[in-house]
Amino acid sequence: MMQKILMFILILAGCAEFPALDDSITDAARDAPYPTLQPLPGIADQPKTADTTLDARIAALQDRAARLRRIDIAALQ
Image (tube, rainbow, N blue to C red):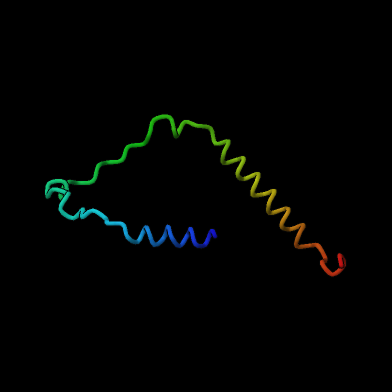
């Protein structure tokens, strides 16, 4: 049943008409320079706790992977 619903949605999406956007941008907007990006205030001032937490999780997962690699699967059977 789910496959039929999915197929119906895909077929229905294929019948959609997309608007023509080629002529919606003016020449002035097309030739305008890209804006300069500015850093958001306060983002660089945040503590790096997320990085240390992530590093701790990576180390824990690598230790667990090393322990799993040392398991003798034949001995478990």
